[in-house]
Length: 243
Image (cartoon, rainbow, N blue to C red; front, top):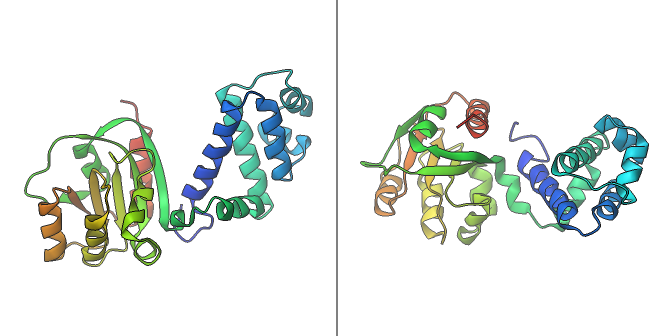
């Protein structure tokens, strides 16, 4: 997904996970499903159409005659998101404001890996060149691709941990990088740091950025991928590849 598209994928994913979690954890999941359907301004007929089921099925779940499994909840939430996209993202934009997830506006893409991924595989996926003199072998469990200009302008140093998703053992990719100095300085003052940093947009790292990478023992990789779309495609493929 292009970084110019609004809302960013990360915002949509965050809201979808929030809704799904609320449904699954509720003692009355049907009532919560109905609440969210109404908040999205969607009829049972619309939701049923997007899910490929009959309206009576949606009614049965909302009235508690059936208990939804995780697969059904996922399809239900996806239907709400699809409907909202058709309506111009009215509800998603409102929820994004209510949840105060402004930091996600700097995120181009974010995902959790289904299993631990070796750094060597990350390097191949981003067509990377390691900067550090030595990188310890470890596994990472997710990635975040960030528009570095938006991140630097909108995030304080102590807010960078928001980019880490569910675990700090992840890859954070900064795009639109010229020298690498700004994101590395921001990460140096951050209390929580990612396992691996990828910089895209430069073939040569600033001396101060390189010094920070070594002194903080932060593995840094320069990506030679053609563009952000290639980066996203390759990391998504890595996220959902079999172990």
